[in-house]
Length: 397
Image 1 (cartoon, rainbow, N blue to C red):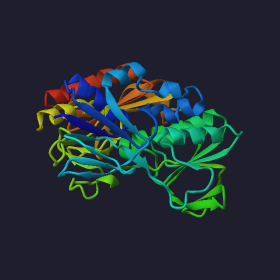
Image 2 (spheres, helix red, strand yellow; image 1 turned 180 degrees about the vertical axis):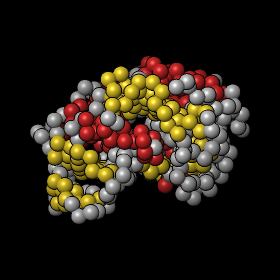
Image 3 (tube, rainbow, N blue to C red; image 1 turned 90 degrees about the vertical axis):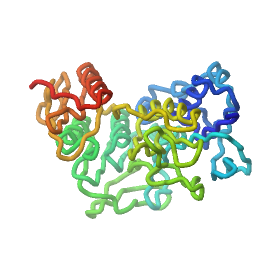
């Protein structure tokens, strides 16, 4: 294999490039990125960067020394517009083509938008340029901020806006935010964090539309209410960036379909990160983006699936001064128990808590709020149990 092209100058794309060199690939390495920026860390965008505690230099994931060691050709600010599997060529939207022996798809996902959200004052928060624009707007004095969507990005952004002194309302269509991820009982705990942080939480109703002519002035809810707004942040999830692969014969369904080793049905094509549906699951989390590349590269260089991704899903979120951590795979019907720490009136106590999700008498997932050491121990138990092919045992009450 003489040339490998990584499509996506993302976190997962960078980790893939590192793994290629670490695993002995010494050929031509091309990295294509639709943004003009070198890879940067996205989690701080909704937190420290938005509040001004971090600047752009703090987000950088590479430095000149590492860039030199990677010895890659960086094609930045250009989008991939197609993949020709017969000639194994990546087509770029500026008319150039890249002939390659192997392809790593790491194009990530794009923020979902609302119809007609072209008004001034309406933002998404997915990229560095998004964060720059929102941060500039939030420095113009106290604002009426409406965050549409109570997921992790929405909650973190709401927390940052509240910390900056803005009046914030979060609108969530579901009865509680984060129910799909945490279940109703623990989602109620996260709802309590919003209220503890001084943020208004409106649940159980969607958004009918935005008010305004040039700039946004309000958010109309499905129940007829109108919330005044100078700034609207749309945090309603993301869509895998796969449109450029139409016509490539790759199987696409909420991402690029891969086996357990990140390998697609096309020879010498693998996918990693937010865009990859690995073994039936797609995870938009930092840990997936950093762990999948090792396996994907090993299988790409071998020309077949030799390894599988076996890590336990893990994510974290910082909201209103609290650190939320979750690991494992929960399902509806799992029993959840607080096994360490305490909840006080539905909110975490001063020392936080650890909760275990149990199925058939075994722990299948763990959640903590401000209880990091017990969480780390419980997460290791899950990982050890998975590597041994069994579920973790329940903790003593």
